Length: 485
Picture 1 (spheres, rainbow, N blue to C red):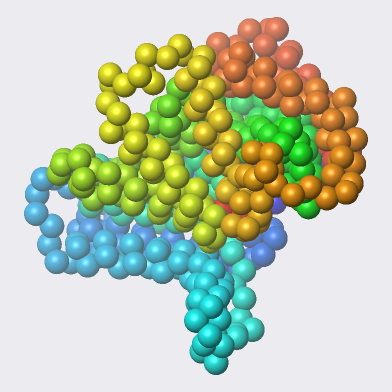
Picture 2: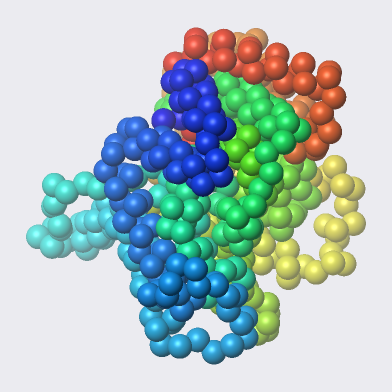
């Protein structure tokens, strides 16, 4: 099930909220968990079974790490000492949880990629007899990358002493499966919401802000991301394009992925507020960044924070000299790219980002670039981002190279290339892309716009919601990009 659907807005959400609010606190968690499993298992119930299995494994591991397994239900759960030694049992429990999570993620996400890569390598070496021609193809469960990282954060936080273990398995199931952010994030760290499972408030002001987040999120998705996506798809799917069309197409894709993903995050934050939870901001106007370093402080904050705390810093961060620091940066970004998808394109995308981050760190604070005017630095950064988005969007490496050649004006052009101009330069699409640009660089972000609601703002949000729902009923093109990750 997706947020931008008739079933969700007119049936699932009203019913889920009605049941949620008529029940006491304990019942609220039960209803939220049940509705979340219905939400996730709507397309394929087996996906929900897989999530339940991993939830039980991580819950038991958390209890063992905290020393709570086998104790009475009323035994107090103490916070582990952050600097104290860990027993073999605690280390084994953490290892089992991490290996289980990563093994399932690795199998479902990278099995097909691994087989295809191995077969390609065997063929290139003339070893066709060594190819593994299997009929087994693994279906990727929706959102497995997100809920796996979220579930892993629980055992890691408990092990480090950043959060207490959660005694109620029902509460833990609710934490992992909460439908607002289950399929495409943000990745909620357990330490950030642990106390909210014990005590949280439900107020009119919080609910109203949640509705505003939801309204603006669906508007960004339906009115901006989807039209920009149509432009991007038309250009990227064309056999050849002109340089102008190629730049226009990748710019449209940049707006599509930003408004698509930030829209989902807005809706997730809004739905969280409507059920009393406060989730952290996930986007902070990333295209205003003046460097790639700043970009990763603004883009997909929950992922970049997770990678920093659970990969970059454990690898050594910047504590062991410059060479080790650059290696840690590169490794983190390469794995971050691979997290996004099972393709060499994503590895290259992550590698470019890691390389630019390392280069910026090497330049230091007194480089010539630092002295450029802010608008120039923002423009240069955005161009670099556009070049990297080509690898993110193109189907494969060959398509990426061909598209980059078109952007540079050196690619071969076929007859009929100009025919797509009538599609992508339609006034409707031009207005949508232009509006996306204006909102990106000149308008307040949702987090700030909804901080203090006034009547004019409330009316604007209601109108945006109504228009979006009307347009949604007419759109056949309605994907969520990050569902495939």
